[in-house]
Length: 517
Image 1 (tube, rainbow, N blue to C red):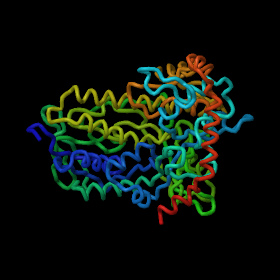
Image 2 (image 1 turned 180 degrees about the horizontal axis):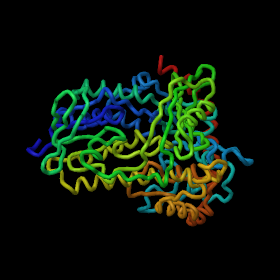
Image 3 (image 1 turned 90 degrees about the vertical axis):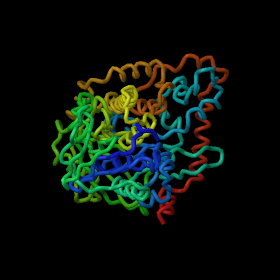
C-alpha cells in the first residue's frame, strides 16, 4: 500500500452486477480495500439474464464457490448450446428451420489431427470451420453437426460435464435463477467482509475536479469513497446522471427494445431437461426458454414499434400454453453503450455501462469481462488517464464484437412474413465492421482475431451463418495444398465421438437430479 492506493469502494446497486462486482473485487483485493454495496429496497431487479457462457465456470472457481453448492442454491442446470428455431425462413421451405450454436472444445485441440499443417507464428493454426469451408459441398450435414457432438447430445437430452474416455471435458455453462444467484453472491461477499447498506441514493455530489465526491442517501447518510462502481442498471445513476456521460444507442442496428418475462411450469421427471437455451423467432422478435431445475424461465424480446406489451404477452402465452405462469414482468431496454464506461473515479458495470439483447447470453458475461479488465487496469488515486483510456478502449472493442455477432443473426435472415422481419430483411443497416466480416467469410477468411480476446471465434460464426443458410464460396486456398484431405477425417472423428458420448452420457435430468439431492 502507498499513499496513492485505493482504500475504499462504494458500489451503487445490488442484483447480479452489484453483488458479483462486490464478491469479485473482494476476492481480488482482499481486506486492503473496504467495499460497501448500497442497495435500494425500492428498486427491483431486472433478472432477465438466466443463461451464461463457459467463462462462468472459471469465475466461480476464482470466487471460491463450490459448483455443487452453487447449482443447488440457484436451481441451476447445465448449458451446452443455444438452439435457434425459425430464424432463417420462419419455418417455411423444405429444410427444418433450426440449428445449434454449441460450445466448442479449445481450437488448438481440433486443428492438428487432420493432416493440416501448423506454421510458425500463425498461432492456433486452422480450425474445423476452415476445414469445413474447404470441403466443397457444405449444406448437409450442417456445420453445427459436422464440427460438434453437442447437437446430437442435446437432441437426446443427455449431458454431463465429466471427462470421458478418449476426449476432453465438454465445455459447458449454466442456466441459473439470476435472483437466487445474486442472493448467493451477496451472502458470500458479506461473509468475507463486504458491507451491505439498504438505502436509496437521492443525489450525487461532485468535487471540484468533477469526480464523484459523495452520495447523499434517503437515510441522511453521506457516503464517500476513492472509487465508485455504478451498478444502477438502465438508470445509469452515476455515469449518465451525475457525470453526464453520453449513452450511444444502437437501436438502428437492433430494434428490439422491450421484453416480457414469464415463469413456466416444467415436468422434468416426464419430459427431461434440455441442456441448451432455446431461442425461437416470433412475429416481432424472439422468445427465450431457459430450463431451470424446478421451472422454465421464459420471455419474449420484441420491437415496441411492431407490437404492444399486451400483444407481446399474449403471443408468449400462446407459445407456452397452459404451462405459462400468472405474473408477467414487462421491461423496456436501452440497446447500446456509454461512450466511456470509466469516467474519473466512477466505473459503470453491467446495464449501466451497456446492454445487448440476451440472444447469446452475454449480459452476465459482460459483467465478468468488465470486472476482469478493471482488476487488470485497477487504479490508484492518481486515476491516470492512460489507464482509463485503455480500459474504455478494451470494453468498447468487446462490446462492438458482441453487437456485430448478434446483428449477424438478424441481417442474414430471409424471413419476410411480418412487418418486423421485412424491416429487418430489407431496411436495417449493419455496422461496417460486420459487413467486412461477412465479406471475409464469403471468401473463406474465417473470423479469427489472434491479437485480442474474442468470446466468439470462427466456429461460432460458421455455426450461426450456416444455420442461417449463408455459406462461404470456398475455404482457405492453402488447405488445397495440405498433405492429406482433412474433411473425411473430421467427419469420421466427430461421428465416432458423438456415438461414444450418446452411449456413455446419462440424461441431463438424471445427472442434475443427483446434484440437487
